[in-house]
Length: 512
Image: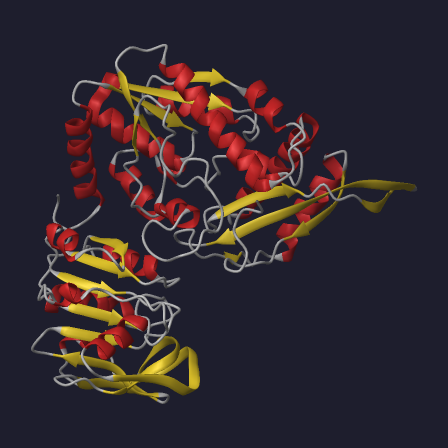
């Protein structure tokens, strides 16, 4: 097992993944494990430090998440964040109680000068608080190293044991020097090297793929999106002609997508792509299906079935590669800690028992921005890398209700216009994801002197860095107006355009 400088124990915080991202941005590799991971498994990773994440519970709750005493006996530096701080204080004999006033949002924090965790940060700076409980009495051996208006002990430390704890969340962008604090913990206290980057990740993964696959072939699921393109390029770099890259035309692709994908792979990347037309199979199985989860599962099962059938045409295939990312895993199933399932993803969760090959997911622990950086490291063109994300289930989850050929045609026509106007305005490269949703909601309209009763489309454009959180894009009204005017005038069957101004959370980026 490779060395993991920092191990993050997840207690169910919505921000746990951000801790990992911030650490990686500071070039320190880290991994997230459930809060109840055994000390033996953690020790095997040979970490230099541990981070306890935040969490929604109280340390005094009957079912409160706690680590075993053996975790503390590892003698490693520990950084506790919010719930992690309360857990540490409680474990070492301190007192935790409900605060008189809950503290949510920005707070000014004053810290003790000369403390290693606050090195190179300005005093009395803004940090993000999100807590109901707080530490009232310090454990023996601990000192208070920061305070806020609502928390006498906004940060505490046992300098001798190298245990630090923060009531605030350094991982969120609202915390002015949060990234610096995390870096200080890793570099100054844990003595980690800041050497991890996409170049080292690529070399590590190439070596790993070569070792795992030996002389066997790998079937790679290609969609033409950033994730699968990076996976295919990484695999081709590792095993060359032993890669069997399969692109499935599901019939749920965007306009001209098949031709674009084939050109990118065969011409730009020089990778011999194999195309399979399975559009009729997908559309027939989706006929009459309106439930979003059922649509996703049908697409997922069909995806695997098509690939197994295609694999039988080639000898020596033992592996299937997919472009699964960390956010997909987190949203689909709680494999890293006590977080709740949001929705299933068609390419997450392993393979069914009857599948004859092993799954390879080299991007499973990466966030989207890291995947893009990896793609550039591998020599993929910037235009390709900066394409907006496109979901595996395709347009099926952008059509509310049953998926039909007529609705697909209508949605594609509207989406092409929206994309053209977004690129012409210069906002395509400034936004994270953009698409059109066919609502299958008819409304009354007037065109000329005639009454219409046609469909409605919703434009969804968001800004984000990793897909875990997102805000709707504040586009100029004139840009939205051009999109709306063109769609209504040029696409027969649509007479109303609306704009989605929901953030994630509480909404998800995709509608289904």
